[in-house]
Image 1: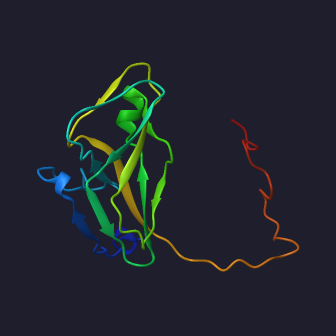
Image 2: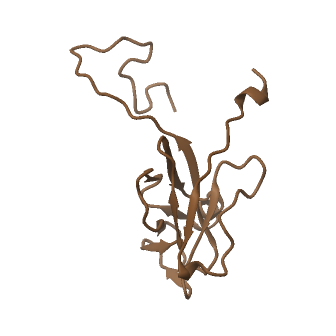
Amino acid sequence: MSLESLAQKEAVVQIKIFSHYEGIELPKYETEGASGLDLRAAIQGDVTLAPGKRALIPTGIAISLPKGLEAQVRPRSGLAIKYGIGLLNAPGTIDSDYRGEIQVILINHGDSNFVISRGQRIAQMVVAQCMPVELRVAMELDVTKRNSGGFGHTGF
């Protein structure tokens, strides 16, 4: 299968900018092959996150996803490894019918205070296809090689 056949069409997502976002760079892919758009903190002043504490950080944007798409808000690996900063509900899901401001629940798993500054990249947003399903009750499920094995059953 060629790379061209793997490429998907680009979807158009409308973005609303709130007044507290003014002067901050729009979310963007930082590299050509990036999966996530970087989300930035739309805060007025610095927010200090003490070890073990969490904070709801506004991004200053809302989006209009076409039906059949979802956005996932995920942690940034650099913040995780360098400072122990993560997201409490990772991945956070943004449904196609949500039109409110995107906010990020950051948590400090590190040993030191972490300062969040205006415009700082705090998370990434990945947009993906999502299909609705119909659930049907069954007395038995088809058998697979893995079957009900889970929680490390293949080794560590």
